[in-house]
Image (cartoon, rainbow, N blue to C red; front, side, top):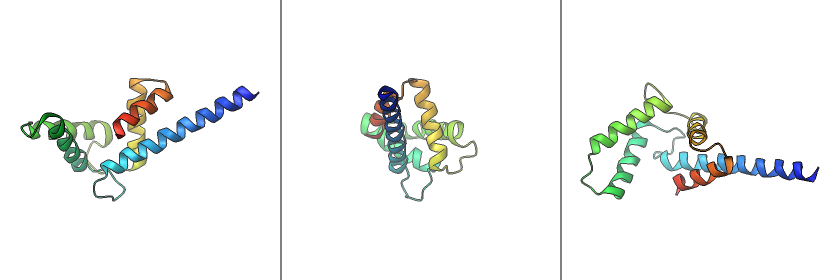
Length: 114
């Protein structure tokens, strides 16, 4: 029926949006543009974000420890760089834990990218 075709098209578009935004988030964090997200890139970027939000007097060591732990617990236990595919699995898992609705996931991911 037309409804099921329309639902399929919407579903495909939502999946495409999730994939595109996840890749954009990955590229923003891949500071050396080598196609891999390194632990140091995640730490460096989040230290800058924390300083923008909370000022230069933040505890940089605390921020570093937090994102090093996040990287090793969620992306790679040894701290090795991860590919876009691994990053995508992590992000989609995180989004699923926040909201099972894929349209809502797009909105959440859009906020993370901005």
